[in-house]
Length: 458
Image (tube, rainbow, N blue to C red; front, side, top):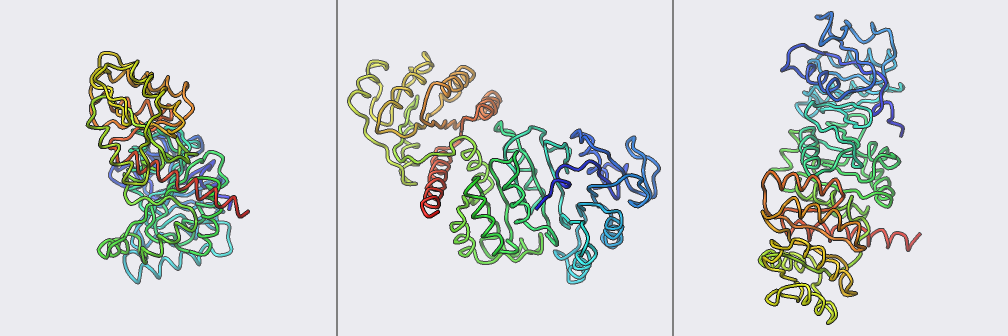
């Protein structure tokens, strides 16, 4: 399905544009301006002649140029006529921000059905209603002025616009940009699976994430998701697991959450990586971007002070990894590099000697990686000590090693926040907690094993 006119529009009409900063029409217009949208912008509101420096039109049909995308922010009872005008105008995509449809009442559901009838037989497609819209870092389209503008390789489909913003802010704070976000809302026309199919062949998308309340068109979803996950990691967070959550889902987008057991089985069948929280979602996507081909089982652990090493070991073994014994030659070389009181067994405890000599980190990690019994290394960062030097060292280390490594840094301070961002930009995975690192690594291993099985039957 070609959704390029929606993600890469040359012209956008904001229907319900306003000069009032509290109005959705003002937010939508400002988001386009501040994200440096590189096409033409046409505010539509009969009560204004100009808004934010742009000429304002009384209706979409009075705009002299063709329109690729319209963003509708007017009251519910006015939306249908506006959609009909967009169809007459030949608008390719219509984002309906307005709520009050199937998620609200039976009358709203009937009105939503009329929207679908209005576009039937035309080339116009609807995003929403009850959504926030479209974001594309490569075309400059955005639905919120606060969304980051860093280009990246992840695209996200969200049945919640607010969670789309939360996801984007968390990912960007870790140094990773985004390609696209779509807030899909009630999905009266374009469904989750339509965006998924588009991202499958999108050249700027390497990893796909999703927040799911309900999968509509389930048979088609299974076909498309299975095909897509073979090409690109697909990380899905399913909401509405428990009864209260299911009720909240229905009032949010009018979706029937369905059995969690069924969703779990479907996600396994299609090879999706399942997340159970926003934290999982961000962590697994970072792992997908940085360690996409991990198949190993044996983990080497290298830390400064030893407490974090014990926690890393526990977390790894809890998800099924092994902490192997290092060979005699590895232990001999570590003993030569470290003080006599340091532990050279796995996990390696370099002690506070690393505060005096931060280069011990890279030296010991390289030694451990040369051990045939080790498939990857998890590094416990030096806490609040020598933050910038450790960050520089890890970025250089990436170019010198041939096995993956993950950093666990269970501290937070402004300079460590900056370190997380820099490490992310260098595509080095770093996690706050040991369990985050272990769960992310095992998620990638299982995904790669799924692909390997899939290849074997082709």
